[in-house]
Length: 285
Image 1 (spheres, rainbow, N blue to C red):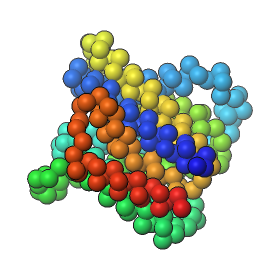
Image 2: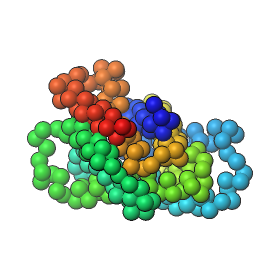
Image 3: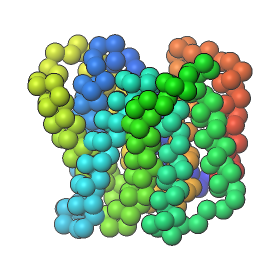
């Protein structure tokens, strides 16, 4: 296994794992408050570990401003669009449309980075997307529900998630420090999410049960590790190879739910996981 594949799979694993405590936290707080706590935990995780990775020179290179600008889009706008799509169309529709992000990542990587995509990579990407969609789609979800304005929000979130792989690859050429990249983007994005929450609600989420805070904080710690692994993978390999592997994170969410007995194995789950694994194998051939 190559280093880039290992980091991409690790990113998918921790992104997937982060959904379990986040789901539990939603029983104690609204999604926006949860997003604030999670992002704060991401920034705190990076901050506490900064003595081991932060270098003074990283503050004075062009890449610094690149990731500051990135934070205004992801996580600030991506979190907002994702929450809106979930509120309007539900988690199922939002998760299914999120599986299309590798297409946008591949398109922008080819357009802006000059990357090439082979037949195996394209077929593997499409198979992986189909597998993820089969895991998240619920039969009977009406098309009219998808075609509402929620489709716009969900698609916008998917485009941003795909685009951030390409912008991250460009930024890492200017600032080759995966931890610093994550720290900058989430610090700026967190401040933006905080501002949006304050404007929309007129107050800050100060009264949240300790259980909810702990759940979202754990989710944020997982996201911090995932972001670091994602940027580490992009440092080492092409976007067209890394992005489809990271997009398999719903599989790991499912595995975690199965381990905790929150889900049970069905034919749909077994077939979906098999398809995803087949797609990832094709991509890395």
